[in-house]
Length: 257
Ligand SMILES: Nc1ncnc2c1ncn2[C@@H]1O[C@H](COP(=O)(O)OP(=O)(O)OP(=O)(O)O)[C@@H](O)[C@H]1O
Image (cartoon, rainbow, N blue to C red; front, side):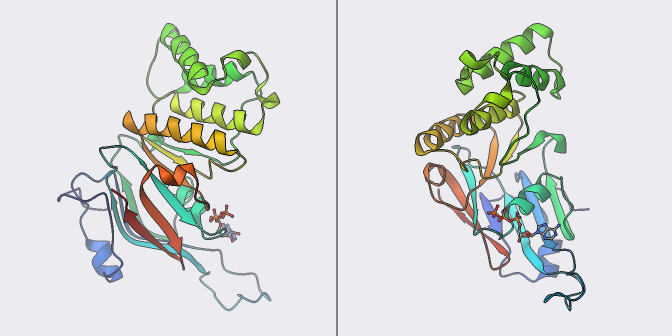
């Protein structure tokens, strides 16, 4: 198990110059929200007879030797960049606890890993109305809320997402951009401390990406730590406070503050 946070940290550090053993033994920075040590992900070994079949342990997709992440007090999100196939989705899913790494450790200093919310790039919506999706999210949120409080939350999120006039419409009838807004509102309703967004700008036009950036700014100001992946530069990359890039199988971090 990783030792508890013991020293102060910058917004993000990586251990690119450290040996794997040194990185794995390094204690977590004191205020870090996320500590990663010697984390890596290998693809399943190639099937017999294919070009990669000699690689019995599987090809290394990415490794993160050492990362201590403390979100910027002034807000702003992390932009996770990387070419198609570089492993952004896999990394986000590992960080969300939805997929096991093939080695290494990661630790969130949030009360429960349930509070690390991952949003798929094509989010699943419940087969009910727009407001019904929010009602279910309000009912199942980790914190207890009275029925009256839940109704207020649903109204707030309809308003926040600009979907009030479509509240009674079936969620499946929404456009791709509206579906993305509903999924974000559903996630934001319970105010998760950490939100991991997988390609949230995919299928959005420029105006919608700018609106999304505005909503993310507000979420970050309210204390949500956001990591979003995008292989392109757009309004989302303009507003980030750190850039993490997956290149040649390794995560490189850069603070932009
Ligand atoms: N279980 C698995 N078995 C085999 N290959 C896998 C598995 N999981 C991921 N991969 C491969 O790992 C690579 C990285 O996938 P991933 O979806 O994480 O990349 P990405 O950077 O998010 O890509 P994109 O930008 O295209 O969405 C892909 O080539 C994918 O086929």
